[in-house]
Every structure is written in C-alpha cells, then in structure tokens.
Image (cartoon, rainbow, N blue to C red; front, side):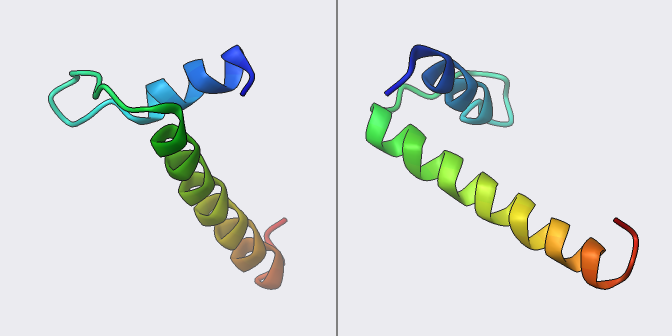
Length: 52
C-alpha cells in the first residue's frame, strides 16, 4: 500500500479525542473504502438533484 495512502488513512482514523488509533493497514484500507463509498453516494445524490 502506498505510504501516502496510509498517511491519509491515518488522518481519517483519528478518533474524537484527537488521538490516533493504532490500526493495521488492512483496517485503514477498510476505513478508506467506507469514506470513498460515502463520498460516492453523496456525489450521486448531488448529481441526481442537478447540483453537480
């Protein structure tokens, strides 16, 4: 996995207290997929409503 992607995933994995969770790359990949899926769904909604 690309170091830049791992770094970005770690930013996503920071919990509400601002403490970085110690996660394995596989967990970080999973969180990234969730984020990408959410972003994709939001984009599709905006597109369907003619806002994009």
